[in-house]
Image (cartoon, rainbow, N blue to C red; front, side, top):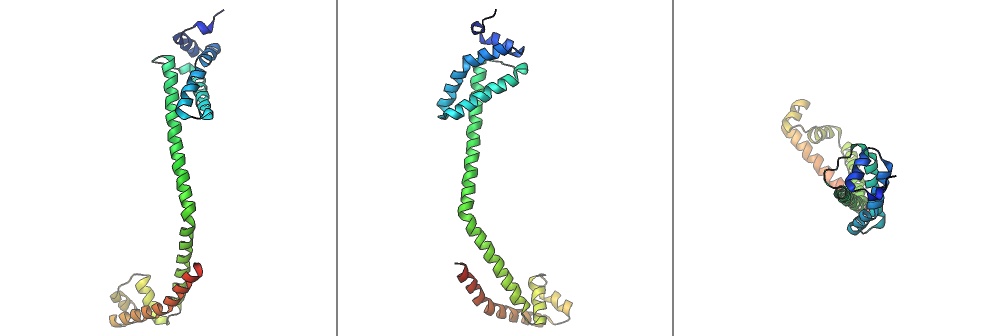
Length: 192
C-alpha cells in the first residue's frame, strides 16, 4: 500500500495527471494551510483567503488531466494563489470605482434630473409662446430658427422681401424676450 505522504511533489503531480484522487488529497493536505497563510498575509481577510485557496484547489482538480507543471508543484500553487490575489484586487478596484461612480451619480443625479425637467419646461413654454405669435411672424420665425433657413431663402420661399423677413424676426424676438423674461424667472422661482 502506497503512503502518499511520503511521495515527492513531482511524484504526486505525475499521479494527479493520471487521475489519482488520493494524490490530490495529499497535495491538498500538504499545501492547503500554507497557501491559506500566504493568501491571508496578502489580503488580511480570512474569508477571501479561504475562498481563493479553495478556488485554486478546485481548478487544480478540474484541470488535473491536462496539468503541466513546468516548475515545482509548490511554485505552481503559490504562483496560482498570487495571480488569483492580483485578479481579486483588480476586481475590487473596479468594483470600488463603480460604487464611487454610482454614489457620485446618486449625489448629483437629482440635480441633473431637476435641470432636465426645468429645461423641458422652458422648452415647452418657448414653444407655447412661439405659437402665440401672429401667424405670418410665426412662420418666418420658425423657418429661421427651426429649419435654419437664411433670410434670403425665407424671402424666396414666402415671396416677401429680405427686409420683411429681418423685421419679422426682430419683432418676434422682441415679443418673445418680453414674454419669456417673466415666464423663465417664474419657472426658476417655483423650482427652487
